[in-house]
Amino acid sequence: MTRPKPSSDAAVGAGIDSAANEDSAKRQQILEGARQVFLTDGFDGASMNDVAREAGVSKGTLYVYFDSKVALFEALVREERQQQAERLCIIYDDDDAELRATLIQFGVNLVEMMTRPSNIAQVRTVLAVAPKFPQVGRAFYESGPQVGLTRLAAYLGRRIAKGELAIDDLPLAAAQLLELFHAGLLKPLMFCAGDTPSRVEIERKVTRNVDVFLAAYTRKPSD
Image (cartoon, rainbow, N blue to C red; front, top):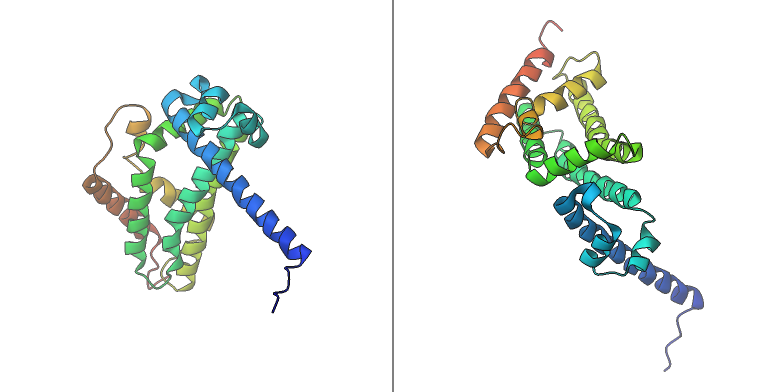
């Protein structure tokens, strides 16, 4: 008994999927090479030749995917920030977990990520590049801090609905909490005025900062 041949549409679809997978893999290969080059040499010191060599692709292939160093750095920043935001914010999916514990755990995870030397280096690079190439600054903010702010505000809104918090200006409260998470921990690193904090120090300061927030916004019987 002969098997029916796959339809031409199915064959075309399979070919498209295969090409898309190869395209995605090649793009990731380039981004990984770029990550190493930008981390080592910074934005100004990096070149497309360096990226092509590190990624193991030809310069022609590199330009098929990214037409400039700025476009490549923007794509790298956007992807890294999106991935970090999604990993961090997954903790907000559990509305039954205790509020204080959830905020402390998120804050500790966030600050540990923010204070890594590789992250500090990228933030400094973005700040240096953004005045000349504002699209890089927008990519960083929209894919990272803005996502975190939106997800945090939504989470706090659900805890308001449960009667745990009393907040009149939700966007402002979320922004305040995001700043409180890293208060006393991030700025010394940004200005080369301190060392990477230990987990113990991060937990201690984040816990106190969260308690400051909850003291201001926890719903009281009179509210």
